[in-house]
Amino acid sequence: MFQVRVTAEIEMRQVQDSDAAALFAMTERNRAHLRQWLPWVDHTLTVDDTRRFINGAAEQFYAGRGPNAAIWVNREIVGSIGCHAFDLANRSCSVGYCLDAESQGRGIITRCCAALVDYLFHNPRLHRVVIQCGTGNHKSCGVPQRLGFTREGVLHEAEWVNDRWVDLVVWSMLEQNWKKVQQAFSPAQ
Image 1: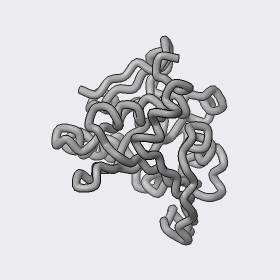
Image 2 (image 1 turned 90 degrees about the vertical axis):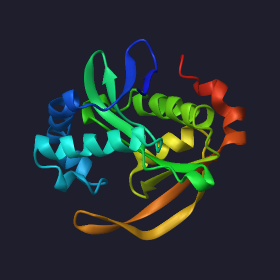
Image 3 (image 1 turned 45 degrees about the vertical axis):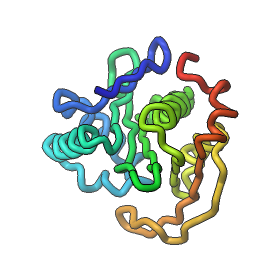
């Protein structure tokens, strides 16, 4: 089971069926905030929709294709972070995340992302990790920027998000470059 203690208060754990109600409640509380940038929000209308996501995440994890975790702060789910299925042939994946609006601005996603990237380069031994963010989503783009990712460019009108096309900034980190920056963002901090 994927489980990482990020700080004394923050933990990431592979999503489980028992998390469905709390994860859905977090989505419901933040629907307007999240739907600006995440295409899945308008399709997550019930706890059963969240359960389907959790079941798919479990299948992906047990197939060795990447974790998807709930972010816990002081025993409460405040967000999620995880991988789209690994590209095993190229030892790469992309990472996505979301966070409760009230928990933003405290470095939670940056710390969790650093811990996940560290895991991805050390455990499944990936070579490349990518984060794609809407060009206007400055808070989300700040995460890979703070972590030393390279801004590769913009994919124009690359994702349909609920009612419009969104340009995506592509950020990447290579395993050899992560070794240079990992000390500043070690999961133990």
